[in-house]
Each structure stands twice: as C-alpha cells, then as structure tokens.
Length: 249
Ligand SMILES: Nc1ncnc2c1ncn2[C@@H]1O[C@H](COP(=O)(O)OP(=O)(O)OP(=O)(O)O)[C@@H](O)[C@H]1O
Ligand SMILES: [Mg+2]
Image 1 (cartoon, rainbow, N blue to C red):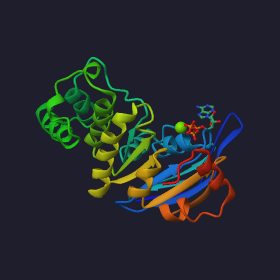
Image 2 (image 1 turned 30 degrees about the horizontal axis):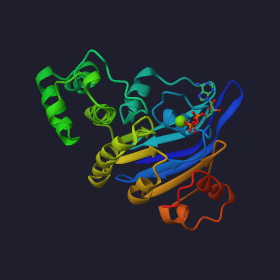
Image 3 (image 1 turned 135 degrees about the vertical axis):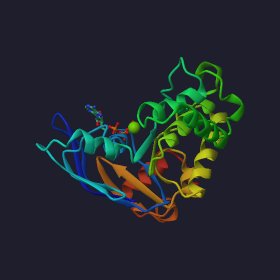
Image 4 (image 1 turned 120 degrees about the vertical axis):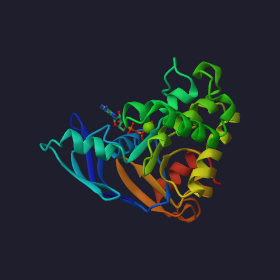
C-alpha cells in the first residue's frame, strides 16, 4: 500500500530525513518510534505532502510521486495524492464553533462536495464507530480530550483515505483517557485499516504493530516485528532509546 524509497528532506540546509525507505502492506499497522527530533513528524508530513520532500519516491496504492529539488508537481496531482491519506494530529484541531458531527461532515461537504444529508449520515455512523454516538451534537469545549481525539479520528476517516497517519495521538491526553483512543485505533487495525502511527505507547506497539520502525537522526536504524525490536534488538542505539524511555513491555 505504501512504498517509500530514499526520501530526503532538509530545512534550510538542515537535513532532517536522510534516505528513508520503507513499505507498509495493505491492512498493516506500522509504528514509528524514536527520540525527539529524529524526523518522525517530518516523515509523516511528507507522506501527506504537508512537506514536499527534496528527493525520493512515495507510492501510495497505485499513485506514485517522485521528488527532485527543482520539479514542481501539479496542484491536481498533489490534491489527488493527499486524498489517499488522513492525518490525526497530537492536538485535535477541531473547529471550536462546530459540533462533533459538523466537524466530521466538513471535509466531505467542502472538499468532496457531498450533499449535506449524506455527509451527516455517514458522520453519525463514524461517530458511533468511535463510541461517540451520544456526543454528536456537542461542541469541542463540551468534550473530554479523549473524546475530541476520537472525533479527530472520525473526521480523518470521513474522507475515506487508504491510509491513516497518526502523530502522537495520545501524548496530549491525561493518562486515563489514553486507553479509549488506543482502543479505537486497535479496532481500526483489526478491521484492516492501513495505518502509520508515531507513538510512545510501547504496549500498543507490541500488541497492534505488524512492523516497528526505529528512527534516529533522520534515518531508519532498525525495523522489524515488535519482538525483533523490543526483545531481540542488538542495536546499541535502539537499546539505548528503549532503556531511556524505560519501557520494556
Ligand atoms: N518547518 C520546519 N522548519 C525548520 N526545521 C524544522 C521544521 N520542522 C521540523 N524541523 C526540524 O527537523 C527536525 C526533526 O523534527 P521532527 O518534528 O520531524 O522530529 P520528531 O521526531 O517528530 O520529534 P518529536 O518526538 O519531538 O515530535 C528537528 O530538528 C526540527 O527542529
Ligand atoms: Mg514529532
């Protein structure tokens, strides 16, 4: 489903991604771990073309884009490509003046020109799926952080992406709210959604990931099954990182 080949990205001469290559099969969940500043967010933003890579190729489904410093892609190609992925951020970025259901309907109506009734029905179904059927008419300020984040997931899914990207979706939440968001993600994984998740929730990674990717300094240091990375890694940097965050799950 996703194939990334030799991806590079620099900000004003500061190389942040230094040749990232990976593949994620349809229905797989890949979890990316790594220290702060290693380029995890930048990588996700490149997959969504919120950042334009300097070099490399990204293939999602049957769409492929190659990047080189001076070539500009057509807006239509970028838009089509972007539609393939849905992004869930650390903060929820909900519209404060819209209810939960209106937040979820917004993309399909504005971007996909769906009619309001259809969009609303589907939004309600998605809210039910993330356990928020009774909260559809509430405004973000009336929701807990965990509920807001689940609206964020429903909103990303409303656009029917092939791939969901999560950037530390639970790190802004109070500990007791983390589980409800991870459970929704677990359900999605079980239903066969293809997902790339940046997270420090190692227990989630162990249970749900088909593939764990350890990034450091803009490179993939190691990737493998959760067992390969958490139990059997002989890589010094991987082990240093895992010991530092003190989770051996
Ligand atoms: N828009 C930008 N302009 C300039 N530098 C940037 C930009 N975005 C990221 N960087 C730099 O790129 C490097 C990697 O940042 P990134 O946010 O991808 O790391 P990260 O692995 O997600 O870290 P964290 O775990 O703290 O979220 C950092 O040194 C950061 O300062
Ligand atoms: Mg980040």
